[in-house]
Length: 269
Length: 269
Image (cartoon, rainbow over all chains, first blue to last red; front, side, top):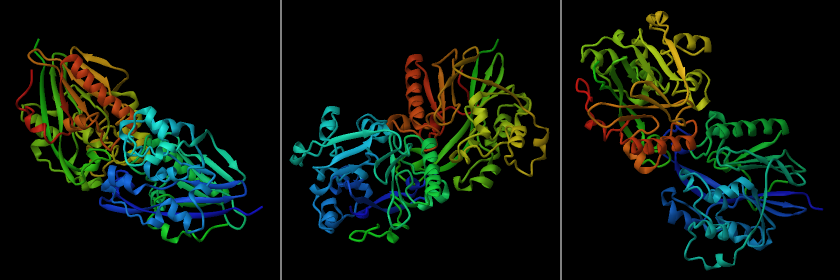
């Protein structure tokens, strides 16, 4: 048995407005922030938690988010840096199905996909104001077709991609020391992830239940949300979980914290 | 019996960002919009629907909204233009208790105050992100004191002001041809108002369930909301009500439509 290792796979950056990052508080103005995937090498297999955005998708659908992503910051490129191929991944876990968290799923063609049941439903059945968030359906081509949602015309490989989903609800220890914790509000079925490690404090990946330390400090959620009351409650839950488990919070889109995180090929264990 | 007359009392302007007016859509940038009160001369008495903002309050608590308000745009000044005093008003109806809809209540010291039961509760018991919205508690000094909420230190007259509240729920015809219609989402207990008149189509005052024609056309609510799903549903309800009753929609904060509205001393009847 190998001890669990956690790699952060840098996925490039996007731009949103300060009024998006800090709902109704701002300040206004362009804010560039990081996106990343989390690779967990576990005795039961290789898990990836979220897969960042697809550059071509953002340029096509949300070019105003000004994506900056090198080949090394794609899922295949980032895995190659640590000697892995996309087909080496056994499980994809998606915190939620916004485009900047599932854009690399399509590369992980051998993986079983794990997510909250409500989130998979929301990916094709959601509020009008969630349209852009759920705009990249390449993680589930069959669902997209059934729902009449657009797929990119120039990716014939998607026709071959038929991922298997395992939907769950509630808090779940999906493998020894890997905890999915319900944090809804940003979306209908959002999950955060806690990873217990041998040599250090647990890592608690907030995903979009809290973009950054500054959001936590300001007690301010992001402007992208389905239910702000639930979203704020989930942020408070993360704070309480971190205290209870002496876990370290890793934020999803934090331009201040991200430079201090260990990125692949380095890892936490 | 006199026919019902409706006066729009110009209350000055405020500034918000385009990302506040059009949630997550924008475009970004300062947007100056109007605020106004609606005076209804009815055979049962004089009603005012919403009372605009208090300039001193905005300068003290939200100066970044850059209020522009002349003496004629205060409630006393606007009433004087049509030969009325604040004490001539019998009823105040508040769509909701955000500062820019209740700032003039304190002048209407003889009026009975009508609002949704949930809204009065929310004015002192609300989500943290609603704090600035509910920052002007001068409409209910006693409630403010009970809840430990701040009142301006320089208005001793408030000590004498003890308004009587009549809270209601559901859709209600509060007087012949005056309909309060539930449109929650922007806040917990939001009401819109429809007024039936003898010589023209009914007037349907959206209040903040829809800031402007552009919000309706874009199917986009404002960024200030408690529940965006309910808010969007309420906007759709207003559209359906307007069609059903052949009513004309009057938006709360529409810089494009407001110049075309008849303002006091002119009136609709």
